[in-house]
Length: 582
Length: 43
Image (cartoon, rainbow over all chains, first blue to last red; front, top):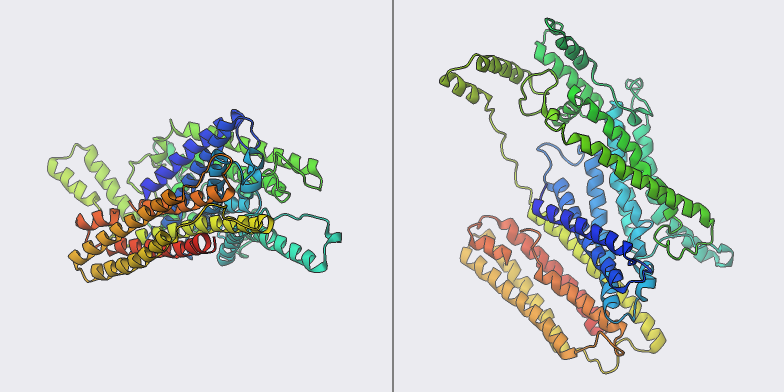
């Protein structure tokens, strides 16, 4: 995992935020809640949840992009890794947009409560992050997980991997673009009253942002269940992913015979040595599972070890449980459960409510099932590392190359005869396989920073979009957006812009000096960038001091709260620059 | 600041950090231009 500290910080921020969300809802907070303090806590803890998810998504996306195994290009990565990449990119686009609106809502609720409707209108503003098509973005990883389990459990290759990649991408990216509109894309009905052009536009918008991702999901699932080739037709089984898979035939026979005292494995076929037979068959089984390269064969072979047979059935169960969100997904097309507090849908309300409730129950069962499956793993963790035939563990699972197995067997015999010091030393030297060449650097910091820039752009872009919406409505209704008596000082604002121009020049000079290994120039450039950055923050503080806008009281307006929110968020982005790469 | 500390701490061959630092400032510059125009100019 790239940026492990960032990922860990994201996880703990998310966990603390979720606990606070539950506490606030239980204490009459949340949307339409009656306790003012806990409504504020609900909003603040949601900010923590989103920040944690954004941090984790950035780490996951950077990992898939830059920390793949040597030789594994983007056309060979597993479907789960691809779906994790698409889902993380989608969340890096969607979640900052939700976060931007949430910051506006929190600042307005905490102070003036004049622009966003207080606790009764929370769902109106941030509801788009919890309904279609945003929920489709969150479900992309479940699709990748399910199709991976189907392929491995049924023991066959996935057909047309390129099309499946495209389907997952369609599922995630189109849904993310739809969610960034900050509007739940639902059919409003009443088409008879609409002109033909608006009617067509409504249908196209709905179809593009909702049905196109569903088409991508349909492609993924249908190809995952399709028969790949005629040769593998016998191995194809539509229900194979839903039940525990078989262990490779060769391994089971060998292990059964080894359990009988005094009996040995049958003689190897094709002139291969005994250890090689097991490896060959496991690898062949792994190839049936779609892992036709060495790394994949090893990993799939480990998954097929008899000692891990009990673990094999768990992904099969979880693949079924991963469909738990399906009722909520369907209910989301009618803006449920995001608009649960004031559900005014004109269609069959009871149906959508029942679907939403069923989805919640299934999600609860999923959580309980995972907890029930995870708890027994803790005391059995030591067993999971053992090799299936009772031999000492080598270090890469039991699927290792033939010569290594022979070497290890001889080594084990020597050690069991109480070896001398020189023999033990020799053994260690023999076991110490030459380490692989270090992989080439893959610019993890640069890629992570670029993804952070995408998230920052989505955050500020969403806030600017909402700013322009409020400005247009205020100008249309009251004729002005900036309150009377408030004057924005333009000199420090223009100074900030000029400072940014200088920073870009010095930042590029720093890169040029670093490439030419001019250390003093690089240090000078970095220092200048830091000093000018501090000057920008100082100019922003000067603007606040000059404007003296009230944020509480009768003179508070939406302009005041939104000005503080958007400029404060941007200043925070300057102050927190490059913390992620630390 | 962290980039400066890393560079002064001896990671002078790690040009990627400096490039990432510059990329972030370029992006912040573009964002501030949009914010400056929408918030400060058009008001």
